[in-house]
Amino acid sequence: MKTNLERIKQHLEKLDTYTATPGAGTTRLSYSKEDLGARNYLKAEMAKVGLTVSEDAIGNIYGRLEGVNPDLPAVMVGSHFDSVPNGGAFDGPAGVITGLEIATVFHEQKYKPYFPLEIIAMVEEEGSRFGAGLLASRTITGKVTNETLHEMKDGDGITAAEAMAKLGFDANKVNEAVRTKKSIKAFIELHIEQGPILENANEDVALVDTIVGLTEIKVTVSGQAGHAGTTPMNERKDALTAAVQILADLPDLAIQEGNGTVLTVGKLNVFPNGANVIPNKVVFTVDIRAKEEQNVQNTLNKVKAVIKQAEKNGISCEVEDMLYEKPTQLSKEIHQALTESARKLNFKHRTMVSGAGHDAMIFANLTEVGLVFVPSHNGISHAPEEWTDYDKLQKGIEVVLDTVKKWTEEDTNE
Image (cartoon, rainbow, N blue to C red; front, side):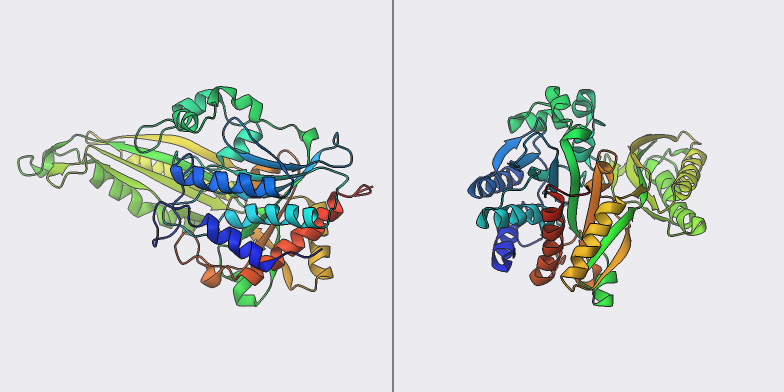
């Protein structure tokens, strides 16, 4: 069985046309018109290769190829199709197209697997619209409630439930999107590395055995608005000044913790955001990641202590926990199968720890999980310059295809 390089290229380039920022990277927020365009394209392409297409209550897209025994759990392949603002064309879609290409090869070869094959394209992995990432996989694994979807809001005050409803999905039926352990045999995700290691080593693929733990908090610093010209400096309750003092201390906390711990303040909003108004509120996010859970916890506690110290002179601070995931060990069996596939195909490969959180991390609580990385040019991601050569992407897809074929055969793991 052989994948088609030109077809892979065409799918990715077509998906990249569904962007709110043409010429300035891929911006495809969940439940937007760009989401709808990409959604319709993916559903049509799934149907073309004989998949039974469906969408769950929150808008995840499934394409199912029935197995010889339809009562058996499915081998699932896929990723997400939303993006960060002004991101790249490969982050997420590369994994979705991996699943679509595997299904297409099966269709061309008239191959009917013993275990069912499911392709999945997931929403809101990035958290760019509603602030909490990995929404789809957390929903599928039963970690998201109806109440949560009615509470999460985007920058315009639209709730996730309201945004879903505009595309015909029903947050009130979120429980129907939950999958059981017995319905999924394995989940395999391909993703760009988003780092420089593979390219620098001139290697083809990385087979991930561990995903770092991560946490994300939202911090609201509140003060009192006032006129920029008439309020004396010693009487100000300037939320931005207090926030800046907090932010200045945070990077050193991760450095001091060591052991690969990283900390990022990725979002910052100032209110009322007037040039001649003292800010009365600042909202920012803090993202902490490490290979060991203790390092995540230590850094998080230190961050909260720094925030607490800023509560003086009329300044108050609120911390909201948005996301917490422990370091995740992926399936040893699938890792071994992927390694054997890479070796069989004569591809240069290595085992790697993922510093980024992916849907694979969440699925690991539900089923056997494998994660494959392909090289990122100059290690750049979440930017318009994000790039992976198509032939290098194809090699990663070939590895997943070979493993998926083995895991959908009747005698797998017996």
